[in-house]
Length: 375
Image (tube, rainbow, N blue to C red; front, side, top):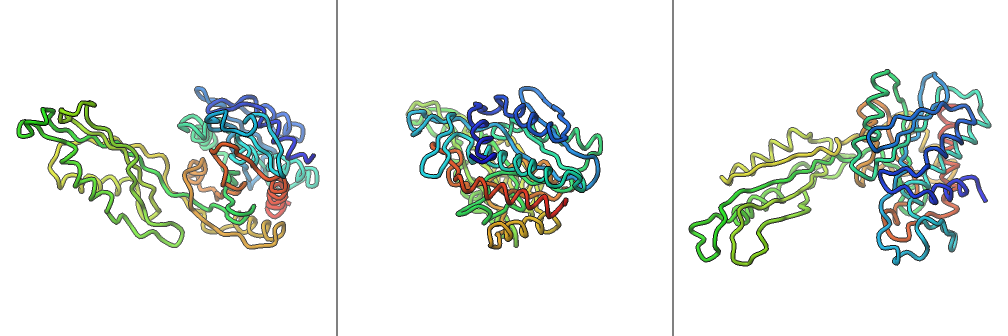
């Protein structure tokens, strides 16, 4: 059994549904403390955060990951218990196998191998872990970054082990992510009897044309790295449940995944301008989940392309698709940030899994990236 597989099995056995860590970070700290990494805990509220570092010189390379996983869903739907790692047909099954304990196991093993071969490597290596990525992400990496910034501990290169690969390991790396802006729109009317609409004001009716305008708005055309910005409605709630009452208000939740062509202020202003055209009373609550970021070039991308070419024999694709990740908290510090990890086909699903061969390939890629940058 490979070291990466053995470590991944240990991690899967530790139930760590967000924001619980389940002892995963203790295990990682024990492993890396043996090869010269300092062990610092930066916990906030119910979130456990781990900062492991070897060396004090620049440049600083960071592997970033999260030990928390999403809930399992119906246990009966799993072919094997989600927290009992099970091998079938060359695949390891278990919650977190791909998102993202597989990536964690691979980069921990890669670091161990690299340090064994290059004990006097250039610069510094660090591992940052949180148990709050799959949840609301308010006490995890964002808080750790605040601490590092306060003490001027600057990250040069950050590799997030999120499952970026599509058909085979290393075929896609994320070099950026779209921003995510959430909104809850409340439109106010006047409640009344459906038989007397002249005495009421139906907010669902008044909202309808405005909502159509919002969803048909051309926010931008994207650019070379990002697709056009999109607005998607996720929830609509209105009415009392009775069939003979005109509701007094309606609530709509929507989200915009936006490119670097826009920012939060522009989106808000344009949204309000559209709504104001329709003359109804409304309120909007906004929540910025993350701004877009992009690492279009640099030593980290060059080292990663070269490593994938060396280990896998093909050229990888730079991409900015998918949802948000904790990389959004690292990029504003000026660091180069990419995401490279397992296949994403089974993440958050029942019977989540990762290929045994993929684990070793990913470990080799991570190790070669370290060689390319710090050897």
